[in-house]
Length: 178
Image (cartoon, rainbow, N blue to C red):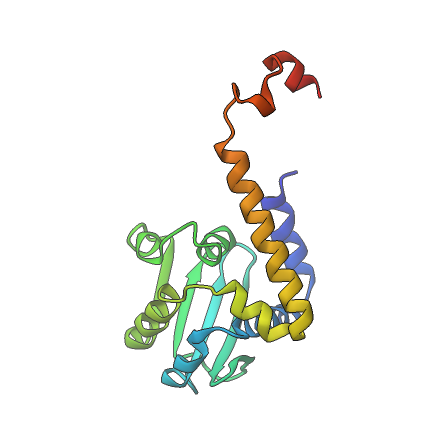
């Protein structure tokens, strides 16, 4: 069984209120320290529903000036699609316009609200250092960000190293064995 088969089955077992709460918590945490929060008031009070067809589950949220909260009121706009497509959107592996034109993402209701929400999310450049500073005390944030920079530098060095460099002069067969 593949993870793509297991996750929808697990999601069917939990009540929708748990899904809604978990998504709102994750999004609200991700928003901490992000510049996009200054623009949430543009959509404050609007409600949207994520209708995940293959689970099936419908999660309705209200946008507030600080993030999302669960809503039991009717949604202004509904975004309908498969779980894998929503995950691809969240991970920025798919473009919402592409999914829309391929009919893998359906927008129902207030088109203007859906377009505004899409544009807001499309323009969100996630600022990891700002998030770290917002969620950790200053000394811990400094250490975490320094470690992140060091790890990025090491990864960059690893990409620069060629198989024939002095640091890597063992025969290929020997390298694979270790």
